Image (cartoon, rainbow, N blue to C red; front, side):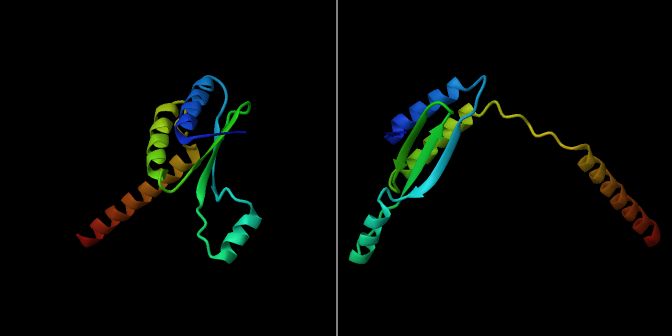
Length: 125
């Protein structure tokens, strides 16, 4: 797995989305990480040192794997760039198809409500 800086990671992620436009998928995972081993973290805790946690972001298209680490300082800027990238590239999503059962159940509920309203209006007059 190739560890990149955040900006080259976004560029490579863009090219992954372009390669998989017609056929394929891109998987992106995010994980809370300190980039230190468990033994190092335990030593830092006992010494009273502050452990800086980062966000480990991984992406794969099944053939190529890339990753990056984003700290708290760069998180807002990275998140904004990532959101723009997703909005631009997620055009292949299909609109969700509603099941007929739901439509039938919703129409039945509407009929019942209208009957109750009309009955209440007739009773009040």
